[in-house]
Image (cartoon, rainbow, N blue to C red; front, top):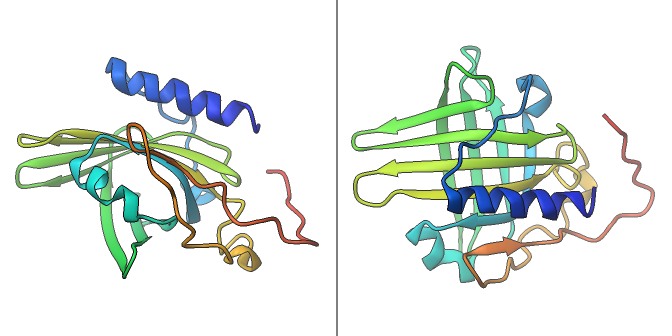
Length: 184
């Protein structure tokens, strides 16, 4: 899995540049996906992200689902001098794993491209706007998330780095002794 994830992320990044249709996780299961995830890497061409990337640190996202099937996302982005918090509610689309957020003159499509529900997830977000369309990919890790392994919260807020097309990678906190990981 160590080699497969970077290869998959690179392949998905190529899809972004090519404008290809992005696949969605087959048989997406909301109950397995809900929980706290650690943002391990992110790539985006969003101007706001590009301006903030050098001051960003690793972050946490908590995902839950409403009784109607909508995806509620709470993000906490530690910056140099404060934490930026976001709460978004994406409406369920007709396809499992595809969610939509709409406002006056913009729309966001969020797709769960791939996940094993416990260790990693790849999210694709397309921001459709008349003024500035953008695309983002996030690599999430469940191995280090607080609700699955609360003792691994140490290391949150470590610097994400900078460079390139705003592709940031954070290897996460060091392993904690006596932690057992179960296979799903």
